[in-house]
Image (cartoon, rainbow, N blue to C red):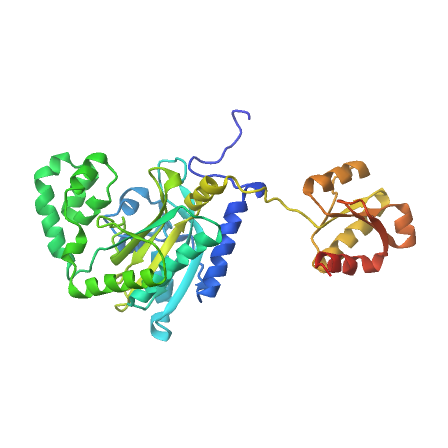
Length: 426
């Protein structure tokens, strides 16, 4: 590649047609499960008012402090490429007045998110999430449904070596005592904390438990978990969730130091991890965020949801089963034109096949018949239509089955229906 060739930006990647097998399998499995569970698709803009993420994701989070792509428009407006999906979903819920019309809603979404990360394998600046939001239920059954839904998607794509980690971080009624104790225990070690955690000590001490710095992690290992401070209601909620998961046979491991890195979480937090990914092994994360709707100007409304990291999930699928089989286009029929003058009519036949629901392709490069046959073989087409002067003159199509070499003639006008019948196995 020449030095002046424009390349993609660091932290972004191209997904070519023949490398998207795991991506497609994951999305299709997710959509099937969403429909089975009664979730409706939500699409929100990629750009949002910056204030949405400052108020929603949290001013003390790494996302807001370090990772957002924000643009000042010069018109007193600040816009941000969305770094995650939940605040946008809640904003749409309120903006469309659903809290007044039908407060209980179940959404799913899929699309690109943007964070100013240090690019590495599985960690991109433009990445993709598939997520759900259940808005309007305080029941632990809703928490359980989202976890079972995520696990069901991974099972549907054949993923086996994933594990569920679960915790409760309580509510604003019971968390203050925990925060006070953590500050008391950490303050003598302030100088040993990383720069970020020294700031968190004053602003959101629970976030220290989420730090990946080795020195901070060593200190955190000596600290009490949040669950010892849970109020009666949070304890009952957590025990209720565990009972449902046990009854439904979903294995999970309790992690008393799991807090997640977003400020809006309350009570339930969970992660799904895959051992094949090394240190950055989380492929899905979620939990309850009962205060977010109110923080964004709506009424007090309990919520729970998750987001799957598509790139991380695909890496997990590759770790277990290797790269996906090539997923390029594989037409059922390749129309081979032996006569240059007949290309227009061959194109009409291709259009008729497609109208009949049969995937069809032809040559657009004026290649020889032999080259067209080679192309059909490379594409893996099970059938070819061979169109020469005789076929054009007699109004017939010569159909060739590529695997066995069997050939037969069909009237031109009957060929699309004939192929549709064969493709349907009739």
